[in-house]
Length: 233
Ligand code: SF4
Ligand code: SF4
Image (cartoon, rainbow, N blue to C red):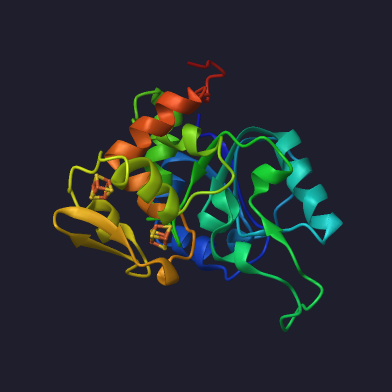
């Protein structure tokens, strides 16, 4: 039977839910998808998987309640996109901006609920979600451990990549981080990655693509991998 999957956007630019639509056919082949783009959704129902996109404004109590309700009703919770998973560019918000000047502080959803998997990206490649859901069925995807480890941290950026990998002398010069950065904030200098600090939007994508960083994070966090069948590793 296909898992019942809720896709719910709590705000932001809508880039993440829009990107998911690009792979909607593939997603509908492997899951029973419930999204406002396909009709009304009911967050009081139980779901096998909930995918939350968008930043959480903690000045709006109703949004916090929605996220808590979705957590309560879902076996597995995925934070999809940088805002939802690690805060991303919304961490720079200080409020007073049109059209909602009262919105001052944004946080990843892990600020208010336990998250099982976090997929950074601004937006992430939607095929990643397809692969992760397949992995949740089979337990075989390497993405499971990577995204479960990222779910344990609240912030992730090019600064972490520099500290943990490049400035620790561990960069192997593969260039994966440079290719993944949406703002071209990374460049290769003498076969090592280098950060142009003023361009970093704290999306965390580079960290999730770096083979060295992800290995270090998994070693440090020792994440629990929760599967659809209820079993954990
Ligand atoms: S360096 Fe680029 S990919 Fe990494 S967090 Fe900053 S903006 Fe995102
Ligand atoms: S992805 Fe990691 S190992 Fe590869 S160039 Fe970037 S920092 Fe270095």
